[in-house]
Length: 380
Ligand code: SF4
Ligand code: SF4
Image 1 (tube, protein in one colour):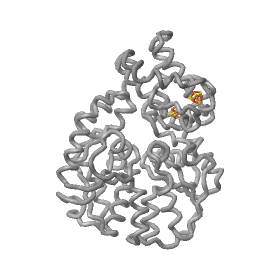
Image 2 (cartoon, protein in one colour):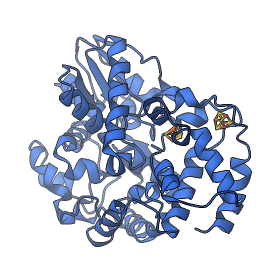
Image 3 (cartoon, helix red, strand yellow):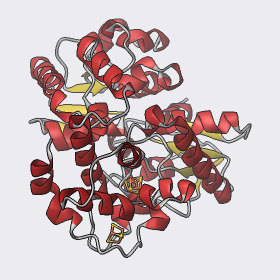
Image 4 (cartoon, helix red, strand yellow):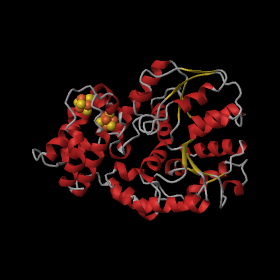
């Protein structure tokens, strides 16, 4: 993207920013970094000045623009509803065009092009987690045709800490009699990391492949445990089939009586993943699932739903600036501690990784679980 295109796409939006600063207490990066250039207001000022020719792209600007988590919390606090996240992601496309971007993004783009996943493993290894789902016959997970496709996503497929998510989601669907399949090595990354990297024009091949696979299975719907895959399919792919996040499907299965839950005495809080809650509008279904577990007491975080604070794992910041990501995760842990909950539940593999890793490093005894894990425990 060049400045002329940026002006066309972003100028009216960025001009809505009146510099009031109401977004500042909502931006996790500003809260931990304290710099105006790391705040939504500062980023918008940069975008506007570049478009108006008062400022040139520079390494300093690159740093400011690539430190945004893409969490969208600023827009939730902004009266004119300035879409700073979208403005930042378009800035990144321009910066990539100028050669001003974190070079680690080239590696990820190459992995996606060559192996079709973010970890540069053989894509067939996407099925590795299936070895842990022993109660499900292999044939039941890998069918040629099914009503539902379970799109697992790269992180839950390849990162050991998150592999229990597809194991648990599959167990729940199998026990509830859902006719589903996974795509195994034929599932390719949805392309979400490329959006955050400012390289969204490279998504096309991944998108075409995934859409073709859905067609060949004849599925009527797709279920996602990853909020970012769900968000990408919902807003970019827009296929002709129904899309569900796992929390929505779990809620349906519980309401239909196909998933029955036993008592579990626990005081838990719920962390809204940015791409599921604020960015996709799914707030209530995960909470309804939690409330359906007898004995579970749900205590809300002070910043919840639209105002939820990112875990630190968004916007490729963990890859570009792990220190900043860790600071945001620590802030999240403090907010969780203030609820007095013994457990934090989320509905996202990246939130699970970020929060659990930080909790471990800080030696807290907080229990961190994905919703699917808690549901399987309550079923048994
Ligand atoms: S982004 Fe919105 S809240 Fe933030 S300074 Fe601009 S107008 Fe105010
Ligand atoms: S999207 Fe999140 S990290 Fe980025 S400016 Fe807005 S609040 Fe800050």
